[in-house]
Image (tube, rainbow, N blue to C red; front, side, top):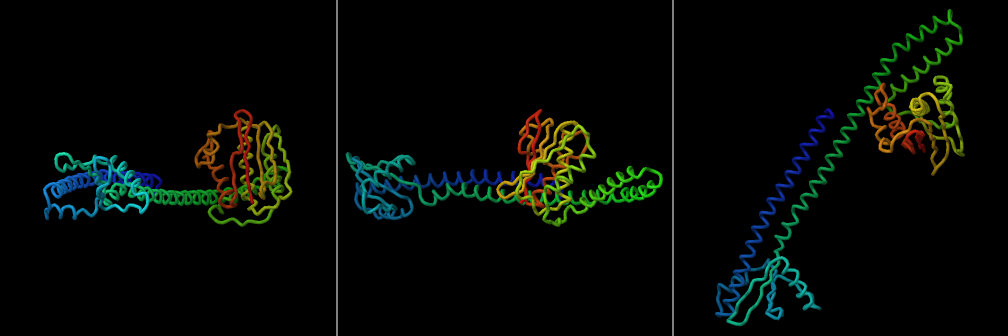
Length: 375
């Protein structure tokens, strides 16, 4: 399944869910209005039956109508506000007057009272509340909306997991294919190195050999992407020093490298080749940002039980809104490259070593500090 297909499916599901919610709200609201109108008519009939019983005398039909109301809460009061009768309400045993007073105030906000005229002078007022089924019906769309939102959240989470799996396949496939493609020219270079030993100064061939070995290491790293790396206890200072030695020989002499070691504990469980790759990637980016001239500092320290390496440069820096974007696959500010270096670096640190890598601080024109935390 492609990313585009996942996007379309997600959009269709969201639109469908919103359609269901809106349709449900409209339908439920219509049903509730019909029920409310029916209950109002029942209360009017109830009031007429009460008028007949109290004004004209006993009537089987009127008595039957009054007795049939077993769902709608009713309170009948006189002109002075005294409660004459009530139905489908359970008042407390104490403070009944205050209870009925509050209930009348509350119910009057829902429905206008129905006037019951008994004789020429006596008047009563019928207050009625919504039935239990009407109350439930009004809350039903909210409950349904919450359930649909929960369902959508689970679906979106599932899509993200699926997308991550797709990205995993792309990463692994790209890395293994890169390792495979590098294999042939590396073997050829190694053979040419042996031939050159007889005609070229040994120092030149030796340096060439280092680069060939380096290419072998890079190819090996890419071939292992997607597989769980073997973690071993290593001194992080030695790893940093090895990365600096490699970078020094391949960058301008106008770049000054500095290592500040303030850590009491430097031992940490890592895959040395992978962490070296992360450090070298940060170093290359820093050299590019400094345009081949400046200071690159590695600070080693301990904090909250973690071994920390901070890589600081004196380059062009970046705005805060870029802090997270630079780790996204494909994002780059360079004219060359695929924008995968920092994304892969983050993957190595967070997924393979359960650590953190992020931009600690950066200022345009002043430089950037990346922070790596390892346990």
